[in-house]
Length: 307
Image 1 (cartoon, helix red, strand yellow):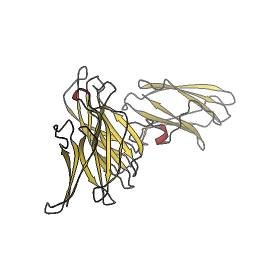
Image 2 (cartoon, helix red, strand yellow):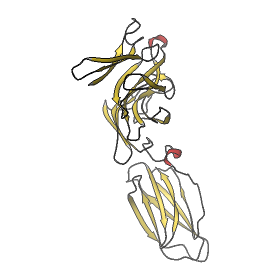
Image 3 (spheres, helix red, strand yellow):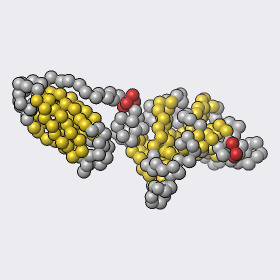
Image 4 (tube, helix red, strand yellow):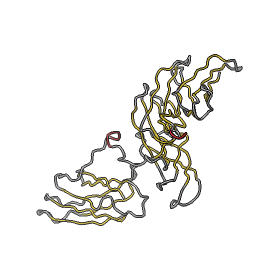
């Protein structure tokens, strides 16, 4: 059979003002098995419906909170139906903003849901891509907004999202620049990690990261500055032990690939001596990198550096 979602002008005042979400279930030859009307008192937006592993359905759209002057202010909206079209739960997420909606929702293997769409800034002019993940009961796990164009009236829109084999997500949409952003309308593809982040550290709680400004380790102490930087930074290293064997400094990108490595001797043994090393990583893509120091048999620690 088929499951179909659209809109119905339930209140007789024109679709786009007071329309409702309309779901129609038909068999393989188009015979109606059931239908239902869902949503609030205003012109709610709906874009897709998907089958779920329990035999039910999940609907993604936007629930209009108010429509001053005919302009809809809404929230991301999910409705979970059982196999007969009965509502199991319906929930909204994030702030109420101008023309906020979900364009795609998909069920994950563990029963959770990943969805994407778009929202605006607090003023309502600047469009941002929206990604959220919810548990099987609809409880929010995280909510993200992403953008590649940042000018006041530039738009960033996400229309589809899928899980990837590395437990992250890939989303696709389009961008529309407004001066001083340059160019024309372009395709936008965004690769995210399992927390919906475009860069490591956007959510330390979800990613399990702990930030450390400075710490002491046996034999070696070091610091990095400036951080963030413009592609060049200095690493200051102190020898606080009698160790004099060479040690290794490695720089890794967010995918765990080693992009740079040097080996250098300790500062003079027996005293606390300073060694200063300048790094130039401006040839690497802008982003977050990890610096790790390791001796012949000892791991000394690491830092996160961003430029």
